[in-house]
Image 1 (cartoon, helix red, strand yellow):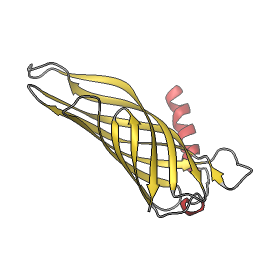
Image 2: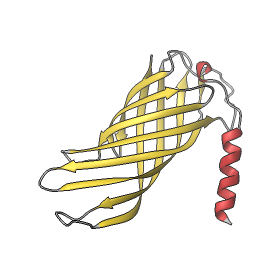
Image 3: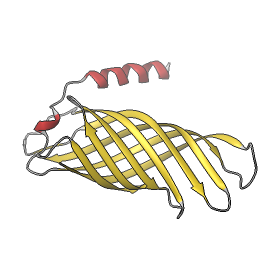
Image 4: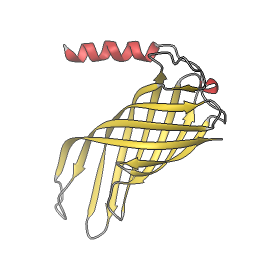
Amino acid sequence: MSRRIFTVVFLLVMTLPGPTMAARHTGGNTGIGFVLGDPDGLSLKFWGKGEQAVQIRLGSPGAFNAFTFTATLAHHFEPFAVKDDSYSIPFYIGGGFRGSAMASSFTYLDGGLVGVIGTSVFVKELPVEFFLEVRPVVALYDDAVGVSGSLHLGIQTEGALGIHYYF
């Protein structure tokens, strides 16, 4: 039952109208920035038509010799109007995939599906976006050092605070 409710709410959110990307800030449709959270690293955001954007992130999940790659497609919407049009605060929801790897005395790999729920602040006169997001992750991972075939299914939550500069 709760899965059906989630599906209906998700479909309604995906069809809500919102302002186009160009109305939110100065600058172009491509943003590059930095993210603090899990994982820390670089972030690229590419806007398509309307309210859809693809975000690609490459970072380190805390280990010195590890990296994480995440790609998500999100739909942005504004559930409430802001009286002053000099800024906007859209929310977004979407999904994608994620993978991590570490190479040292042992090998660690994981990969899985990631959801994204977040909010942004756009200032119309600036080519920047400030964002805060939470990402639930369902991943297949190997957590045993040097033990072959020890794959597990895990669920975790990642969070991030970041900024994109648009050009």
